[in-house]
Image (cartoon, rainbow, N blue to C red; front, side, top):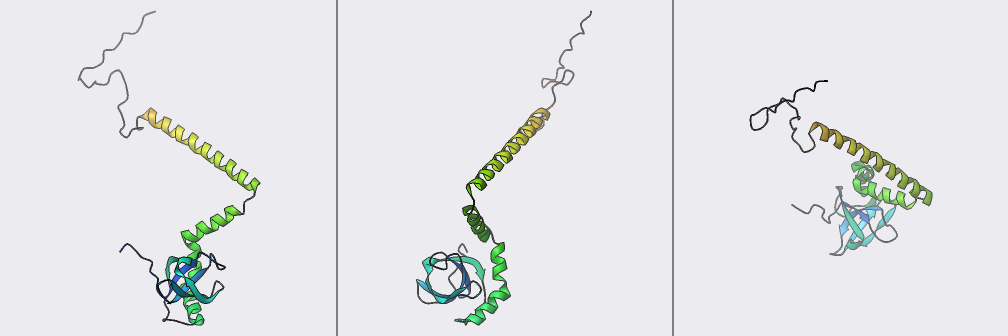
Length: 168
């Protein structure tokens, strides 16, 4: 099944717009095709209706009865450890990274640029060194080639003639 995140009771979502932007909520009830009743007992979002266009559904879902009270939602939220799961998710880490980047000063951005430059220089130097070594031992293009030498047999089956040493 290609689609995994459905609008359903217990689905955890992130508010994308309004005064509670960025906070986690749980869908308590579906009002109609465009609105749902949400509750965020552990994130400080009061129970209320919100448009589906203001929500981003997550992969997390908690189990509680249909139209449960805030107390029941809070208990299910804590039992499933949604806050811990959310902070460990890639999505939350990306959001935290974006917020951290927005807080950087000019000097912090300068230091970051210099660190990247140094890292790329080290990476390039290491790559060139490895490529040179691979070229020398013949493994640059996959198969190891035979070393070039005077007394090794040639592809035609004839040995390469040896030159006589020069006399002084």
